[in-house]
Length: 360
Image (cartoon, rainbow, N blue to C red):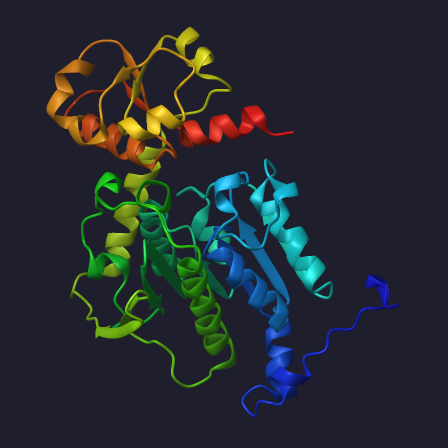
């Protein structure tokens, strides 16, 4: 019986490919890949990258595993519920391939540190399916000169986009100049998702990563790939650089992000926020509240109605609460832009606080 100490990886099937061979396998062993998000997209991507023999995997995730994740996040099992995804993912991929180095980074990336982190890796996979993270990673990629592979999912559909540093390569701000309201985009939590859909997109991210690292043909280039897995339809749309200075726009984006990150507040409990003098505002939809009510009194204003009721925040200190922190952060930014200086967002949202409470 082979022990982990004696384990020697067998990449023979992969190395038989003429484009890989001994030299390509050695290149993978020297590669450093950062995977941001160890959920539905990150799970298959991490497994295939570890199996392929990527020498170092950095895994960023500030969340803990929830039972609702398991139908699509197949890297984990029921015994893992309540534990840090970053640490779980690192442990599981090291078990898959003990010859690689995998490090869990248990936090949410911020504008202050992301460029310096990117600089230490060869390639980044953005697997959060969170619009704020995608724009943050796009800006950091432009400034660090590192390629990023993006994927997103919506119910039965997905998108794949690769940013490679270069004069004519469109960044995310070339494609969508204005960062949209998270409440208008949907998410797995709000809109639902068929489990294999992020699995397919995450697998494609791993394929594109290996093509880039091995310099294989057929890379996605400047195309945006659209997949509809109900109709099994795949389309590629040619994208173009918008003509703006991506570096200038990225610097502005990170500067704005640094300022907006000061809008977030973290508390061990909602009662602690009340004791600190905050009034709570629940931005979630009715069905979200019914399934996971807050354990503290709060004013209910659905996120789509916040700006229409901006005068409600003219006096006092307000802490906006949503499920994961994206809608509340966006709402706080918009209210601050209207001159309401005492509005904050609960960092990580109510779901994170729930998980911290019930985690073993």
